[in-house]
Image (tube, rainbow, N blue to C red; front, side):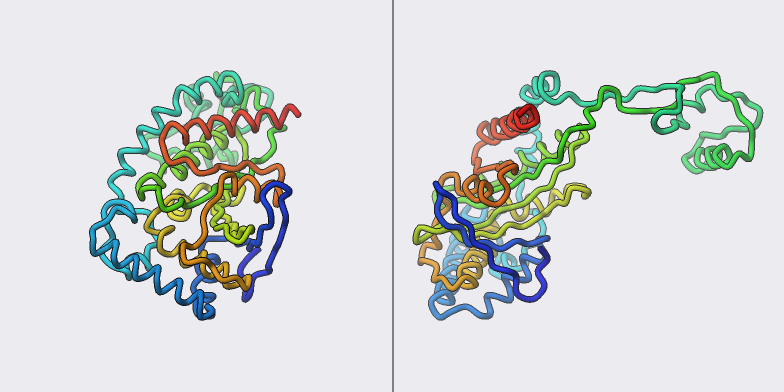
Length: 339
């Protein structure tokens, strides 16, 4: 749901994980707006928690700590205005490595689980007309110029508008996906963001990077993917959560948005903490001084009550575990198709 004024409160109960208090947001922008506005209405106790977070953040900055990842941010203001996933040299090192690690899994899964559809051509008018293929052997009854993209477009429009009669010796000029499974259902993915205090800042990077590779793998196979990020905390035998949609089925993946809200320690350990306080305050709860904790399978428990057909990417703070989680989601998706 879009954030317009005060968002609707939701509650659900998991038999194994207890009570969930949660809000739904259609975008990161709506979520950030809610957090900033709710922070202005904090109770005395929750306001004290927010002051403590800011003081602690300043300490980490002054001590050049890796709490916010590397490099250390320069100021509290920089943290508060952080909206772009940047300034992390580790990102450039991790992304090619995680691609390499995934290769052996994805090669097997491509052959045995979810093969990538291949383009084939026919002469029966089935599919999309391929001008590029036909133009390779067009009869020169009139000039066909493909020297530049503009020349190619002009030639193509003349043909489509029937300004000229043409012939081609290539008969199979209609492209289609061969052996494509038209019955593949869409996939709704939920990512548990953040980490508890023992996790180093840069270790948060793996979950978002692995998820972006998973989205690319599935969409190349014609599978529409929706991506939601879960941000929450657990205390007093209940969890308080925000479910933020960062990609609709029809949208291309915005890697910056995904990485920012799911994996960026600068975001999570400042604005994310601010969000945990705001969410708790909105539900009339006083968040503990330690801001609660992320419990094991908290994301799985939540999604089981919200959307049993959703797939959950739980926390993975090392390359091997993140890669294996990607592979397992693909396998589980295929199993769901066969059920």
